[in-house]
Image (tube, rainbow, N blue to C red; front, side):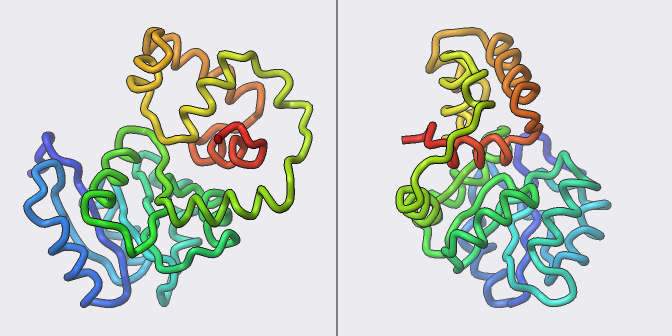
Length: 217
């Protein structure tokens, strides 16, 4: 029977030793419950349909169905499930592609247990999370390429840009409200307006837009 006080996490990796290691790192954390393990994306989707995880912590390179396809499938078929990628790859192409596939975050496998737990809690709360290594890979590339003008950005008000920046940094609606000293309902209204103006309807998509347009420092 589900424990409503804990975040239900499904682990997905094709290496049993890796699964055991991740499980050991997260075991005993009072905010989390490991409800299952899968060896590929197809198995993860099947398990998720019966176990109903809150967060899927998933690798990219797997047989049968890799992390890219699985992320797209989760986004389309089980949109309430948050996908957090845990990978050894720090290539920008991988990270951007996963964002486009609907992943809510991207964490490198060299992070500490505390950061991994923080990432899980952040995406569960509706935010996005990129570990420092993943962020550096993204930002260094954008710094080299320079910004790209987009007339859509000019349609956003100053407050909407503030909200979008905080969304991209992984803050929840409650955290954004506290930071900007406004109500949660006002934050929700701003987020809805931003989505309509940019025609972007996922947190991951908004994060990608903010990164591309250098709204995040």
